[in-house]
Amino acid sequence: MAGNSQRRGAINKSKKGASVGTGGHRRRGLEGKGPTPKAEERPNHKKYKMARAAEKRRPPAPRKRGDDSEWAAGRNSVLELLRADVPVGTLYIAEGIDRDDRVTEILAIAVEKRLSILEASKAELDRFTDRAVHQGVAAKLPPYEYAHPDDLLVAAQDAGQVPLIVVVDSVTDPRNLGAIVRSASGFGAHGVVIPERRAAGMTASAWKTSAGAAARVPVARATNLTRQLKAYAEQGLMIAGLAADGDVSLPDLDLADGPLVLVVGSEGKGLSRLVAETCDVLVSIPMASTLESLNAGVAAGIALYAIDQRRQG
Image 1 (cartoon, one colour):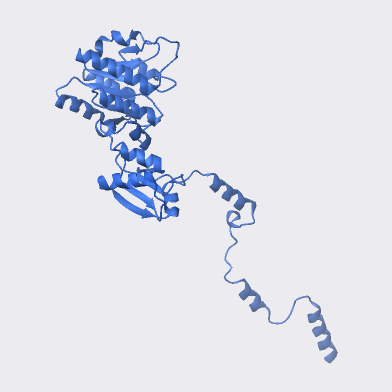
Image 2 (cartoon, rainbow, N blue to C red):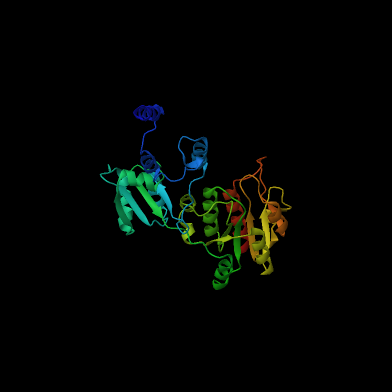
């Protein structure tokens, strides 16, 4: 009997890892681990690495709706904006900034205009300006308040004047847009209309180039430029588009003294096809040289001057 008992004990001990009463310990060791994570959640798995790489390729999150404020950075840029009477919401100055003549003038103008002046750290200015070269100075511009295209006709009627509206077709350089707004102000236009998409808007650069004229001449946005031109035509305005190969020379434009929409094309391509087809007449600017085309801002200025001279004559 004793021999049999000893043999059974030897057999039990010879089984690798087997010992009496271990089942409960093993069950407890497995408790709380839960289900196996998905492949995309395990750092060493190929699918996890592929998912992380895809996230890095995603575009940055869009700006929150309603936050259309713009930042201008750098001593020269901010000073030029203030000199041009561009509306500035808040002026930010770096802590312990080294004041030169530009900073002194910036602060003097800001005090005169009663602007809000806040002190900020370099890290904050870096974040505000998206790490632009701010030189310790930045300005926050409020969103531009665009008019409705119909408001421009109302302005002409209220003034008892013959309507003159400038429509800008896909001009993408904000400096050209600013120059057009400046000419519109100088030669009696009642406003400027731009497309909502794929075109320059009233940015800090456009404001600066307009030399403050954007505060005097309303700029409106149209969802569909061709549709808006047709709406103006239904209200009795003639549509004249500037084109290098226009049928009528600018000095011969008989429509100049009547209700008129002047359409200015983009810098390189000119008028788009649908816009050109909507125009009642295409007008060219005569030039002595073989220059193919004029800058959009320059062309608008010349045309508006000629129209203004015809109206005054």
